[in-house]
Length: 246
Image (cartoon, rainbow, N blue to C red; front, side, top):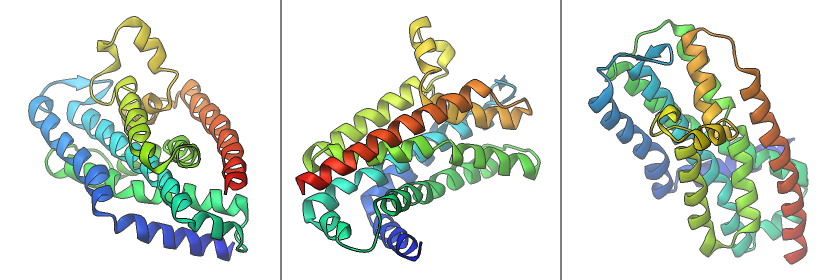
């Protein structure tokens, strides 16, 4: 456990020191929220909450997803430099390594969520009780677990040269299909059905349901769990294969 926590702390520090990472995963969703809120924030309610709150949740989910995926994908760099090989020779167990990387992915996603929520309160004029602020933010954050595992899989299967392209492709696809840029209801019927099968849709929708005070969707929780289990299995296989290549 001590080795896992130590490695997680080291990885988190290295990730936060990457200026490009911070700009892409923190500044971009914040800027998009300010833009979208300026364009649409004054309109009526959406999904049982104000448009400002709706957009706030969408951009918080967008930023959190990007941070979680990108943090895990940095494994490709560690593989190229030989750092991953050295870790396999240390006391850090494979399970501890995976747990540490997943924890780091969730940790570095927090600033994006917090800043967008802060902008929602200060600029978007979102007003609600403290327990809804906490519940909505926690719902977004915990729903990022599948994306933390997505980053690990990408980091193990992709090369350094292909990691960025693959990460951006997955990130953009999840944002579009998940209705984070435009409401899912504006997509074609086929894409609407597809959206409800991807985790990004439920990352935002579960948080919106929390803010609206309605029951959590069991289907959404099931989709997130299914993606997490399947991706974790793929990540374990990819980890073992990357070790044989090393």
